Length: 396
Image (tube, rainbow, N blue to C red):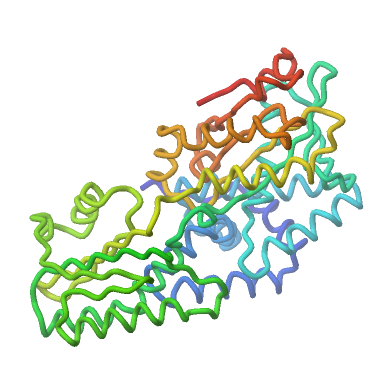
């Protein structure tokens, strides 16, 4: 892996951004995230991924080596410093309020990065772009103009967790808390095991301190193992313990995970733990398929009437957060996002919408500026205007 350090200009811009946030607040934020990342291995990796932009910025401040993804994210964070510096006083005040929200509680820098990235994508294809939401307090985020034709752009971030019954954050927290128990059990019962779980009601952590569901499932799994039962079933969960028959169980964890993914499919939640020669695999599925694209359609229907004025054509620019590369690829290739976006475009709420666009961290972290998905509204009068074509022409 090629690691390098950030240019001085990038470092100065990030330091200026941190000064806007307040150095004490930034240090406290990074300290809390580090503690969360170090507290448990699986959940820690999720925290590191979700807050990768903040960690990349902190590496720049400390003049530490950067991975290629760190370099891309650090450059994007630095661009926020330039954005803020170019705003008028009201715009800077709104920016600082948005930055404070991004660095509070479970917020991230992604919404701000998404706004800036969307602006840059439109500038790259010939639009003049104003940050109307920041500068003027407009309900939409950007006003993009090309050849005397203006379009309002709303930038919104939707977590894929909104479309999952089994939340990934809850799943990894469950695995972290049960891992020591499984290792202890394996030391007394050496072998290879597979615990299959169907969770009709799903698995989620509604609030940071709400672990009731996790605690109950943890208790049931432990009770099942200690009582030597092979199955346990009620309306909340169906658990079944079987021998692990996959030959890849003797391979590395990565090899095993790849084999399990092929066996159980892309929507399964998988985890592997081991003790010596023992291997314990957990595979969980919800009672229904994930509906990430459906969740996006519901969000689009809420956004259009609330944030577009209706006096100009509008674009809803969606950022789908908390997806991995495999899930995002399937959402694109299986046309799930396209289907739900096009269904939304037939709704009355979509009348002011000339196009819907979709991006994820895959595009945000790409060094080559990977294109967003774009779905044009065929019924909107502005949909065929040559001036808007670079922003609305469908890409799928």
